[in-house]
Length: 411
Figure (cartoon, rainbow, N blue to C red):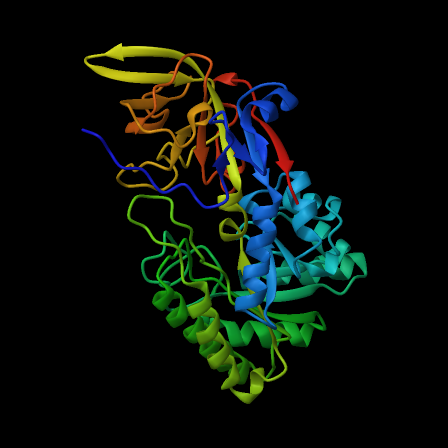
């Protein structure tokens, strides 16, 4: 039975020969330039458009990029020049952020399991540590004293709420992330008493939300919580990171997030915020919403085969580069990302196929039972929405397969 796939995002077209264009360039020419497939291509012009959309919808709000979504050096250095901060989740990501030219004082470091060496690295660089526990804060005090450096510390809060309908719930109930809200004021007072540089709150309730109403409700609750915690701690936060959670429509039937509505509602909330937050800066931390739709994964068809009446297109790529598209990165019921045959982009579908990877596991599926134009050995298959949590979130070493290439166009 034919299964639906998600909608190919705007910004892609075909040339007169029917070849997919990415950033105005032919997919086959990009592969030739890169040297081979599999290949991730990121259109920087689409990223720039997203950043511009954010600035329009959220005037006065700082934009932070969560580099876990995609830390490819050329993309990261491009984004770093345009955003107000970079959020990292490891010492390795901190190094990548600094190599991309980011101002270390505009880098914040979250994550529930930071090694002492990573705390040392962040404090020495002058990055902000989002403390995930009282114990982590005490380690930061000791390391700062040893280095003779004043640590810059924020507190990551585990709120009592979550973003309804979010793909990954980061707040509410028992969580390894952050400090339970009830314990935060005491920790803030301890940070202030230590002489550390108090930087504010990081409050992240969930991710991959497409419901504007749910995000509006979560942001309203986050601002109220930040005010309550600040009043109890007796200190105003220099910065309140409201988290992100902006989703993109991967699957059939999903619709884009109404970002304008979220921005309008947040402006109203901040206009009436309590006095203790009157001088606080607010930030939104985004990853996939900024870069996800700008990426395409190109993989070459190696074989056409029939099995029990079904046609399979076997490619040189797969879940070792695109774990999320294979359905193995959080999906309960596997659904199809948008895919296409790059050499016949926009042509009418002719056959039902499964597009699979080259790995020896039945989990290695890029598309199940989708309708496409007829494809032959040597053609390119394109998987869209590949700009976030593609290569950075996949088991690249599995079966020692060939690594994927990456490149940018446009911008």
